[in-house]
Image (cartoon, rainbow, N blue to C red; front, side, top):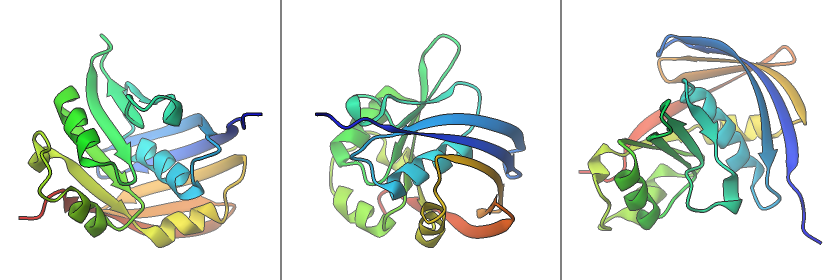
Length: 181
């Protein structure tokens, strides 16, 4: 018998000061049985950090040809391909050929991802954006993960502040080059 996804419902007050984005997000996000809680939290955070018109979650692990998150314009054309975790070089190559902008949000060691793709052929590798989310921050959110959550997320100067049930968690996000010079 196949396992089914678990549905999570988030109400997130988003204040992304760096980008001037202020909105209330109502998200219903399925967590696939084979998806780790850390990956899931990184996926939700990446959605918030990239939030703009046209952003959507893909069908997830069940559709490996799609990005984890995508931003499409009104015609349906792919504008941004967003990956989570540590995608391989072939996937990044494909993403870079398919979209004008590619971003990777990792909850893992970014240096490990750099080593993994070093020397590999990746279309426009120097333009791919790599963001490392503070692993302690991810772990703190995982420890509070519940099927229904009301959160406040503030982003300013690469600092992340998340308020849940009166408790503030803080972390950071750091941009890394995909392939160091």
